[in-house]
Each structure stands twice: as C-alpha cells, then as structure tokens.
Amino acid sequence: MLHILLLILKIIGIILAVILGILVLLAGILLFVPIRYEGAARCEGSRDTFRAKGKATWLFHFIRAEGYYRNGKAGWRLRIAWKKYGKKTKGRPEEEERVSHEYPEKREKPETTEEAEKPETVKTAEKDEAVETVEEIEATEAVEEIEAAEENEEGKDVPETEESPEPEPAHAEEAKTQIHKTSRRKEKSLWEKIKAWFHKIKCTFSGFCDKIRLLGEKKDKVLQFLESETHKAAWKRLKKETVRLLGRLKPKDGALQVVYGFEDPCTTGQVLAGLSMIYPFIGSYTEIRPDFERSVLEGKARVKGKARLWHVAVFAWNLFWNRDVRETYRDIKEFEL
Image (tube, rainbow, N blue to C red; front, side, top):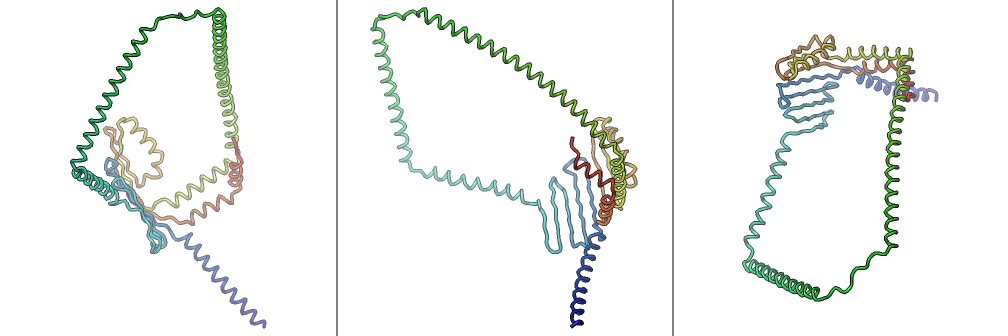
C-alpha cells in the first residue's frame, strides 16, 4: 500500500516538474529571444516622394510584422504562425470610382427613351389643359376688376356725416401718466444695467486676482514637491536606469543622411543648434547638412537592431525595488494642486 502511495506522489512530482519546466522555458523564450527590427526611409524633396518601410520578427519569424508608406498611402501586414492579417490599399479606390461613374450613365438612358416614346395624344391633352387654365385665370381677374370699380363708386356717393370725436381730457391725462411711467421704467432699467456692468467688471477683476494668487500657491507647492530630497533621488535613479535601457536597446547598425533648409536662414540655423544638442548620441552614424540658400528636405535613413524583453524587465525590477521611487510614485498619486 505504501509503495502505491509513493508511486502516485512520484507521478504527481514528475507532472509538476514538467509543468514548471515548460513555464520556465516559455519565460526564457519571452525574455531572452530577441525582437529583430529594421527599417528604411527616403525623401527626395516633397511629400509625394517620401517612402518608408519597416519590419519586425520574433522567434525565427514565428511572428512577423511589416509596415509601409508610399504614394501617400500606408499599409501593414501581420503574420502569426500561419494566420495572416493586414491592410491593403492598392486598387480598391480606383475600382470604386470607376463603378460609381458607370452606373449614373446607365440610369439616365432609360429616362430619355421613355420620354421619346410618349404618345402625341398625351402631349396635346396637356396643351389643351394649360390653355383652359389660362382662360379661367383671365376671366376671374376681369370679374374682380368690375367689382372693385363698383365699390369705389358706392364709396363716393356716401356723404361724410360724422366727424371723429376729439379725445377726452381724461384719456389725455392717462396717456401722459403712462408715458411718464414708461420713461421712469426705462431710466431704472438703464441704471440697473450700468450697475450690473460694474458688478461684472468687479467680479472679473477679483476672479483674475484669485487665479493669480492660486497660481502662486500652486507654484510654491510644485517647487516644494520637486525640491524634496526623496524625489530628487528618485528622478536621479529614473534617469540613470532610462539611459542604461536606451543604451541596450539602441540600434546596432544605422545611417542617416539629411539635407534640409528653410526659406529663412535664421530658422535653418536654429534647427541646427537644436540638433547639435543630440549629436553626441547619434553622431557616429549621422550626416546632417544644412542648406542656407533654399528650402529643401532630402535624405535617407536606415536602421537595424534587436531588443530583448529581459532589458525591460531589469529596468522595471530595479525601479520597483527602489524605496525612493516607490515613495515618489505614491506621492504623485496623492498629489493635488
């Protein structure tokens, strides 16, 4: 009985070891198998001539991704094992335009044939109906003119017997009081509008002063947050780990050749001054030539390298176990202006 129990435990242990080995193997594949990437781009002076393409593969092309941009259109393709996904832009817009131009011409032709095949009797009947309607309109207009003339003659024969009565004094006084009241209301409403306008200016000025005071308080709070020794140590560690990560992920092979220029030579010089700040990091494979005489943008670029998730995992691990970084992250979540 005991040896049966030991055999069962042995089988369970073997199964657990196999599962653990598979998990370790998968973790090793994810962390240490590199993602290989490469890309290229070219521009000959205008947007229409700009072309670019790039691809990335992982695990002996088990996963392959590609992207491209040419003729003003972008597309991508993705293959995972035997399944393919992608976006193709060739040919479809032209076919849709061709179909949309063909259908209206086919729809207009039957309408013209139907109008040509109408019998002449229908056309003559329509003409007769139009003539009858015109005659009826003319007859009604003549009758209306005769009636209007008769009414004018009757109005002349009637004598003017009564004159319009003069307004009574009471009504005149009421009208004057009403005019006086309306004038007072207008003056009152005008004064209220002026008071409201001054009150609005006062509120706007006080709100502006409050905002300035609030910005001053926020500035002091932000400076106090940034000048903390814990936060300074956290920023320093983050900068160090980021530089190390970028150094490990940077391309192993690449080249960049650019000829650029603006209409204003001053702008060209300012851009060159900005590029000189990052030139120590990219100068080994970069060639930049400014053109101070014309507006131009020409060049080509090529890059190739590989990256491993292991480096990203080490970056996250070092930051997570740093006490200053954890406290700074907690303070950022609780920080409110």
